[in-house]
Length: 319
Image 1 (cartoon, rainbow, N blue to C red):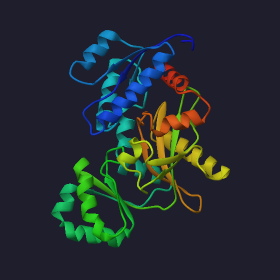
Image 2: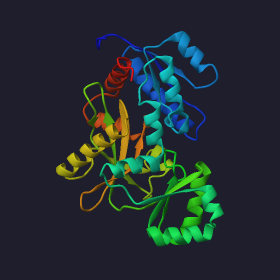
Image 3: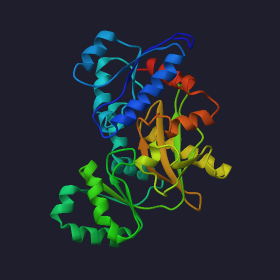
């Protein structure tokens, strides 16, 4: 298929996760950019009858812009594979591995990359072993400050930075609101970065890293999606040799986890220039305040051109 040919694209947006509204915003943005270039785009909200509708329509490619478990845990992606219709993003099995933060961290650690020390703790274990005893052990084992987050989830929902032991009980409750397992990890001080990786057919490439500086000091859900609550610097204000190391690390992790076409790798660079892996985003946000679009524009390309290239790359390869 030549680049001049238009594609029939189905964008999946919405779903039933905590990130439904973000997904809808991402979906509309992707659809608008692709439609502006002449492609035929239909936005569908996954629900009963979706697979039947896809089988009848047979678009050239499906682009899931589903954040949270609805799209990123791998279940839907695995189902899409059975339709024989290409889709943007990784195979369902790879998505499932990356979606689980403890699993992704362990794979990355085994490959020799730095990631903060962590403990993954189920709600059941937390309760059965006695909350007070477990909390005391966590502080003794990991120290403070800590970051507590749901083991599966996105958009910083349920994430808390714990500076003193007194803040840990509430942080655990917040994490368990979003998942049955909480991830407790040591907090790395440094420059917070988001690195978008794209692959339009010639192999994965890291785009300019986005440096994240929340006004409140915490990159919360509100800080992510409300304009003015976070300062972004693209490219990040880091030395060229550190930027190259960060880019190489992001591409390596993207490939290690089996991600495809588009991902976002979140890292923190410490004072020594070490890039610490935090998590991988299987289907990163593409709203007006999201990080991936900032990286794309900083690379000198237009959003529509890159989105079309990603869709085209997916449409020509069934993984």
